[in-house]
Image (cartoon, rainbow, N blue to C red):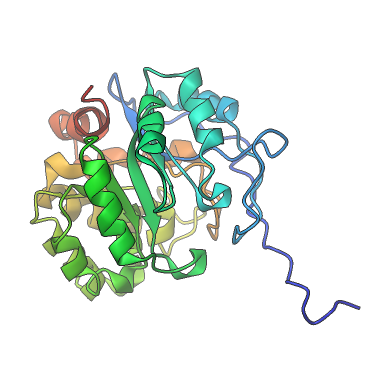
Length: 302
């Protein structure tokens, strides 16, 4: 019998798609996956005891193999909550591909200037904060402001992960930030609520600010369709991506979100790549902005 004070077992996040397809769309040279993760392996890089789900190992070698299949040449590794403030797995992956990988760290407010400098030298160019409630909720806003001023001196930016309903709530906080910030996963808006929902309107308003960037990742999170639907999977996310590109073509990024933690259905990354020409139409210039020039400007300035 389980003691009433024993924590419930963590929900296990399934492994990524075992056989991703080769995409029909050919990515431009220098294409970047601007939002992906490495998990473990736990034997080398243990997971945080405070994690909210149980990950399946998804190491750097597996990510490199996927990128080779998809035609991706650069990547931005984003520290995931399962590793907490221990960025070792991410830094090890960057060290294996220092010219083509950059990183987004998660750090405590108490980190020293020397600690930030060491991360910079390890390829980190941003710090991430989770506002998503199931991942722990809102961080200390004053601590974020203080850290933002410190990382601004390094030329970094912030990466922010919100629940959609919180985008309007945090508008005053975002307007007062002293540096660029990137909003993950199209603000996690839900396609079922339509294009004129308050969170998406708020996201488009934020994009009027030249400091605001948005990632066109997480189509499988926005979508209400399953991959078994006719046509490409998750196509109902396309109108949202197109409007975001139209609003700020020079401040959008794209990423796979591999290995896709905590999704209702594991996507085929090749099919996610094949959504890109629907996002951009046949415009090669837009494709190059989204996949090559924008991430290079944000992450490879030095």
